[in-house]
Length: 382
Image (spheres, rainbow, N blue to C red):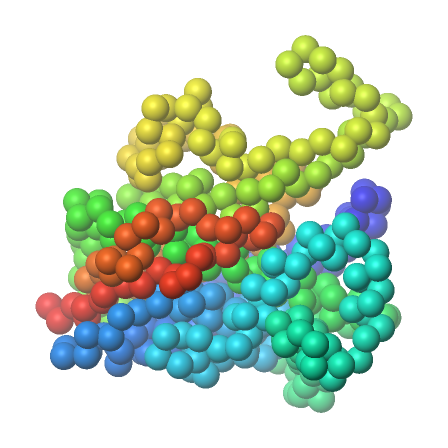
């Protein structure tokens, strides 16, 4: 929304769900979904199994399960429905949505055509686009299921949207926007984190050690507050967010006019009405800020007093009034998932994924190139 007033009104509707207090209310739900992922990994990684794990798919499934529960009051349960490679057709639909955003953005004709063409006709000509339209229909179905279900004690996003918005298309579009923004972004960050941590033996052992010290009994609940209090885990989370840069594009903004202060960049005044933007990737790999190892995964940069000032330069979620509303949820998911993985499994990168290095295809949200992040995981027994 370009209009600041409209943006403020819509954001105020959703703020309670994504505030820090709201995330603590949802912590048990997040832990439950991550626990279901662990249960499936326990089976796939049992002694003698030797089944390679498609981690990038697994992370997409669990983040979709979390955000659909949070937004629609009904988890899509992709972790359980997926095959042993954590694949479900929904993931392909998400890829199509991300890949096609630029064409739809710059072509009004395509937008009109997609809106007016019956889904059955699209299925005949292009099954990938049809999967994307099917996802939209699934959003409508989720809204219908929500309306017919008994209301839960804990509020979900649909509660606020249906109480405040009258147009069903608007409600579904907002909910699907939350789904797309709240799943692949976090999943890609987890993929980047695990590749780097598992690829560096000393780094991996250090993380496993601090987690074992914090949770001697592996079955003990890993509360978010206790996880956030582990400095090295927090450093790994922030370094993953920096390296992933999950919205690497320019995030366009319009320079305000009126009584606003002039925008001055490098001594030059940028006129009101100009569309400007900043690349998070460029910001996060600037050697003047991060040092000569700016393109290396180094959690130590966040430790101690020297790491505190770096928060100013971490723009994964943008900054200011337009910053990502879901950042508290993303932090919680990354903390809980990384802790579960490195407290319960010994993880190594499969040779087929050696060249990944966290570089994804930029379709607004990065897509992990085939074959994905493939891991060899062993369940820790002692």
